[in-house]
Length: 297
Image (cartoon, rainbow, N blue to C red; front, side):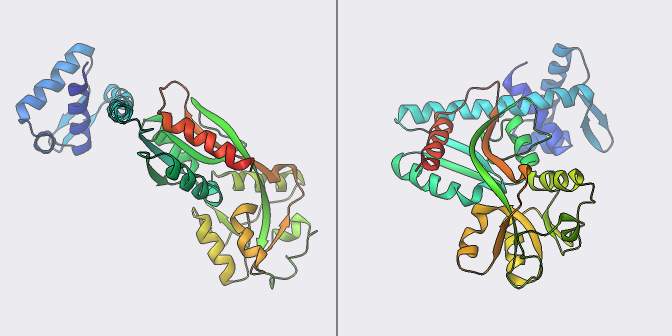
């Protein structure tokens, strides 16, 4: 099983049609078909279901593809790292950034880019789940994110970096919810805006409510973007929970008010997530060191 055969199989599945796939990778259709047939013969299994509407992977094909994407991504990364080392640079970093990181990461990256000539970084926004899936298949080198208290992705290192505090946030005119000590049962009746599910904030909030035997609030709006959630708070009388660092400028200016939750689950950890069984680019460890240095300043 060689890289060329793997790339041919991947092209066939991505295009769903042998002719379109052959045109996309600039070989003839018979050559593409022969390459995949040779791979099937080598493995002793059928990799593609061939029908009048095109091709789709069998269960064996899906298994090969899971590893194929990782192999091809790592091959590209190896070539890029070699080029960077030749030029004395840290090279390139493909970084996923979840919502948590937006309040501290820009300052870290700006300083790192100014001190490391030749370093380049691709940023992909998303949620913890979508970004860690990309790390698994090698499309990203790492993800900077809040580390969820539950449901951590398997097979990935979750390296803790910074503690962060969740706070209850609303506009100062949203009464009586600006009061520091409001029972969670009463808060359940507020007009909540929350992140989409499977984020640490949602897990934390559900823990707090279940601990006192109360039903968690039903949000009037959900969004995967913490910046959008914060913008909504500034526009109307809503309540949410966010990391303190994200709302500090608005709290200091008096546009929002933030109260501590006073709950053990209110403290979370920001961290960096990467594959446990992989060779990592030097830029990844430079970033980790830069984050740790910034957090101690």
